[in-house]
Length: 331
Image (tube, rainbow, N blue to C red; front, side, top):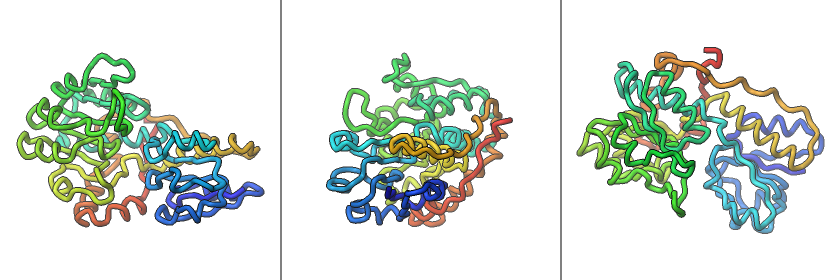
């Protein structure tokens, strides 16, 4: 069995190469093309690889594993019609993203207490649920918005009350609950003066021009990890955002281990591989404080590195990121 893997995905290449009869090829994402996957039985990628007919038609690929929480880079309908099973890793990096949110809030509030502030969480899935949990642990009032789940609060209601509005939705461009440019000029107009907007979901969930206007006209603070048109990010937003990181909110060692383990299990099930699995990861932190979350991660070091490069090293900083540790699950 031949497996092609994005070379920035840790752990999986060595785990799979240890299985008898498995041939592993690791490639940088820009080298994963029709020719390189033509004879592969499985393909394991991140968000940088668009998986659709232009890449996969005529190949041997029967399984795609994305070691990410989202699948907007995969043409799910085409894969289903082609008989290709797709697996992803929902929730694998949720504690790391929650750590990023609290660290960003701490930095923007200049290390003053977050207790009593209102945190609006938009998208209450695997990630948003833990973000809300961490917010409550830090003494914040948490408002949850997730219309597809039937939660009663609208985005307008949450935006009007939130001191911090943070987005944790998938990126969808069609349908009743489309999330493309979910944050726009209308939502910006409802925010309190000096409120904070955070995006650690997908870049196009926030409209960059609307956010820039809100910063200029309403004194809005911004913490941005996911950017429109990555890696060619808007340099004006890079300069004006209080926190600006290169799409690494979920880049913890534990999160990468979880993601790799989830894809390993899915691939083993698909191909009927009988092999010992790595050990499970420990649970997320049950109780934290603002200080624990902020001290566990120097978010401004990542901001300074991206800003110093003028955004030009976005992809390099992301691809060479030194995976941080999450908050200790025993805390």
